[in-house]
Image (cartoon, rainbow, N blue to C red):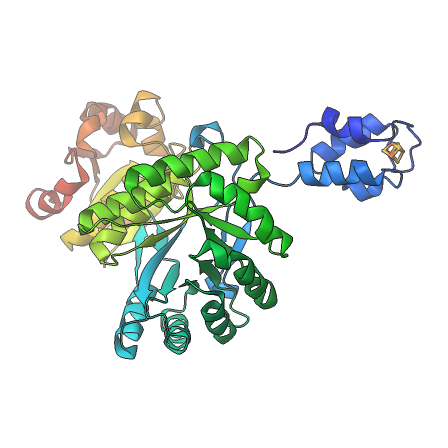
Length: 446
Ligand code: SF4
């Protein structure tokens, strides 16, 4: 938890000597609390005060980096229990499980498929981030081979999961410089695995049977020199895992250093639909990494959609640039559809226009990222704003007709828009899903 100026001030010498460049110790403390000056600027802080300030100013949940370069993922460093209190910062990494008992062709095929598991939603790419290679064979050579292949074919960062530190060392060595997350399932091997993680400069995930056992284990691992930890409370049912993740998040935000790390969770249901439910639940409730048993596109889309929605800043509407967009090979007879610049509204309309295969113009009016009905209710989507947006867009020069289509939910605006713009208003469907049929069967330029 960030320290307040007064908490920092209590640790300073309080001599107001000005050597830091500030007139008083309190002024220095206030600047430091705002993150505008480092503690080192005061040359008179005692070692005890330094230790207290440094440990207290550490984030409640450690930042952990997995992978490198384009495949790099950062998790942790969260500060809130409830998203609406501020926001969640670092989206959970979604991993697809690959067993090293598979033959090489199957490992390569699954890894390639994982690397391709991506979708575009409201103008943003959402994708699977990791492949979790599991040493189910117990064989170090097979594990190493599968890890190498999975990393190469997926292009993603890896989680390497084994029961023994020796097998982890083998696979970690093969991915040297790629910074995989090493996962040790046997708590008795955790300290040996910490030595492997330290030697290979990798983060380490440790498992223990329950939250208390985890809190006892982490100091032993950090004493071995690994700071970037990920926690597995060992639970394997939806209910138990949800409880454990919530307990750890609460404890870490209350200052429990032993549990102040991101968490890893696993789907375990046999039913593929329930796997997607489990993964989505763990994303919503605090997991930093979610390892999914299934990797079908239909399973991943709702999981990644949940993640995107949970990690969007709840205080900021998701908006697209307000402007005129041409969809397809438009010409002077192409229809003009008007909507708002709320991302979900805009992309719903765009997707349906594309699906209709009728080239069309879409004008997104600046409503500060609010949806059609919200913008209408708050008077941001009205005859004046629509007409101004039309004029600014230059649509008059692009089409020969003088017709625009407004969403069916705001049909009440039609008379006002006609008066203000001089264009003829056509009432489109209420839902975007009705657009293809509308454009094919009802729209006429003349
Ligand atoms: Fe206070 Fe240190 Fe600044 Fe001197 S240098 S005024 S002791 S904060």
